[in-house]
Every structure is written in C-alpha cells, then in structure tokens.
Image (tube, rainbow, N blue to C red; front, side, top):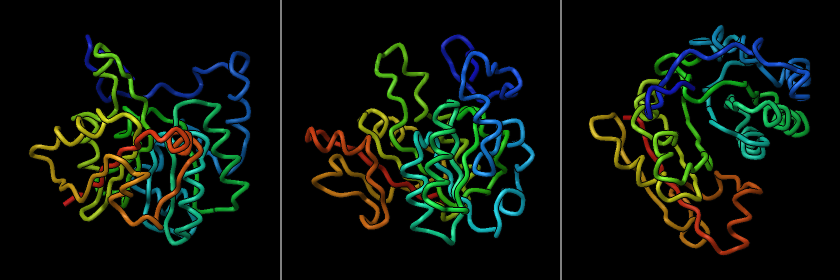
Length: 236
C-alpha cells in the first residue's frame, strides 16, 4: 500500500524478498509450507491464468480478500468443489494459519497468496474473477482513517474490472459504515445491489443462508447480540 497525502491508491507491491525471517518467524513457514501457499513473488505470474496455472482442474475463480485464519475460505471451498477458491492476505501469520486450515480441510481447490489488497491489479486480469468475498475488512473507525478503508471507490473500480459479468460480490461486516460507503460509491459502475441486511443474525443474509459460513469472528458478535451487516452486489 502506498500513500499520497491522505489518499491510498493501487501501487506496485514490494517483493517478499524484502521481508526478514529473523524478525517474523512466520516468514520461513510461509515460504516453505507447500502447495497451499502461493508466495507473493509468484502471484503476478498467474495473472490472467489462475485457472490453468495455479489450480488443477481449471474452474471458476472465487476470491476472498482478507481470509484471516481461513475458516470461511476452506469452508466455502468444501461446499463448492466445482469452484477454485483463492484467499489474498497480507499478514504472514494469517497466510500460514489459512494454509493450515486448507490442508486440514482437505480442499485441493483452495489456495492462499500473500499480497496487498490495494495492489490487486498486479495479479488479476479483467474479467477473471467469478465471485468476490470481503468478510469483516478492517474498520479503521476514526474519521482521520477513512481513506484507509478498503470499501471505497478505488476498490469498487478495481472490482468492476476484475469481476466477470454476472459475478457476485458479498460483503459481511460488523462495521455499518462499510456497507453505507460501498453502497454510496457505485455511481456509474456496472453493479446492481441484489440485497442488503442490517442484522444477519435475525433477518438473514441477502444470499441463500445455506450458501454461507459463519466464522468464529462472526459468532462472537452473535453471542453478544450485536449486528452483522451484509451487502450483495452483482457485476452487470
């Protein structure tokens, strides 16, 4: 991620070789873990060819940005063995934890790569993604942090290019401003809103309930009777 004044924008991603394994113990695990992880240095080489290059067999590509420990990613890959699932995560520890979850679930149609969510044009070609999932992106709740929020016009513009027509985009969040901000920045972009929920626990998701995963993080809000918000978009 790069900053120009207070504005965040898509930029080239620094290579993983800049990271020091002696400082972060997860760096070595990340580089040696196995086929569940595609290291960030290699990810741009799959641009436009994720189906034929990274997965066997080729299948529609579904992408989760920020999969955390991989609970949702591995679960959805298990629900949809006819789809390929790729997580994009920036933190080394979370990449490794996600890879462990993928391996434990035995889902060969899921992988994780380490990359910056503000640099996704590096690794995805236009019309390459069949489904996009953003679950609980960082809230950056202070007003002075608003330009750090991923749910923004620049991110929506990227998604409009990367998603193929008919592809769906799901947002689940505990931060209502993410839904409101994303809904408000779609003007002129090829999206339509299929549905919205301001309380997933009591009102349900806008997409079919059986086609969802309740993560441990989401369950914490349910246990406190706090709302989870959801927005469902279609690329038209």
